[in-house]
Amino acid sequence: RDEWTPPPRDDLQVHGLKLGNNMLASLPPVFNIIIREIMEKPRNLSWIDLSFNQLEEVPQVLASYHMLNVIYLHSNRIRKLNSAKCLTELPALRSLTLHGNPCEQTKNYRLFCMGMFRTIKSLDFTCVTTIDREKAETFYSRYLRNKERVKNGD
Image (cartoon, rainbow, N blue to C red):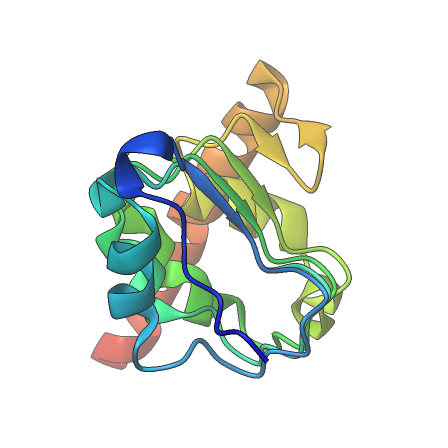
């Protein structure tokens, strides 16, 4: 059986990766190496589809791709919304999906996500409106104040 070799890099204009439906429980430690092999400019990765896998946490390595503006993580096994906190470091993030994960059952899930990810325009394929944004900012700032009080023992 012949070994597959990728086409010459100068022919590729890769901006996204479709890795959905692959039964991934995590991204391999060599993920960055793989990206460098298939993309001429790995920093230009703008979208990634990791939907319908078996991820239990949001892969922290995604936070290093600052041009990411679309991330599909729906229909995995992500339980804790806090594992997605690393994605708040992505200034270009505009669209995020997390529905179909156990974390979707979190009380005020949508408000929490919109508050945490202030740059997104779409959450779970649904537009984030100005009214949504205002409610989310109020909710999330209240959440952070309460969290700080608990931390300080107030």
